[in-house]
Image (cartoon, rainbow, N blue to C red):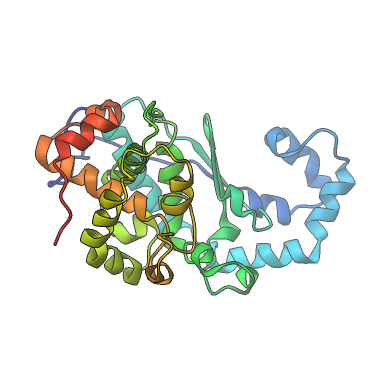
Length: 305
């Protein structure tokens, strides 16, 4: 791990190169025929379960709904150069902070809107479901909750890729207190911010500008709520559901709930980690390995008034 800290000034990436291998599998698959299947199966055996007959894949290729999704993806991503540029920048930052990082092969797909698998990272392969980045107003997301589909945007793709790369790096904490769980999320968001310096903070966490502004304006009152209700050192697992997990809003069980964004605990964790970074000037290694309780103490976090 790189111990260099480049929080205020952009890291020097001049000696770092990136050349992502991007395979447009959805183009290869949906524009193929039965005669092409043997070659595709030989090239991508991990995408063709062995117990399926070729007729299953031919029917899938010819399915009207799947062809519609494929066509909608191509409208948005025929030219992939903008996404390639963003991925190159991400990979350069990964190599700067994590010198042993090796670029995975990126395979783009159509997933039939499998929202549980937007991006999957496994060893040297990274799968991206392009049909989950068509824009929140696209008709295929018509029945999806607003808080979910607001992040089905083109600009979110590189954030989700970065997130998939970062999650395996962060070791789990033995401390199950609420503040530790917040800080664990804060570490992840801080690393994402370092890897994606051109991405606005609200896009890193997946908030709208209005949601971000609400969190900033409410910071002092929410922190007071956490402290007065003795939640910080509580190990109640319900607190994760209320304040950290994906949700349409955070759950204070008050009238303010309907105005709040979900995952406000993650937002606070990020604020605490930022305070720690500002006070202690750590490197990436320390950010990842420092005990969450120790980080909290050293952050001397105080909410903005």
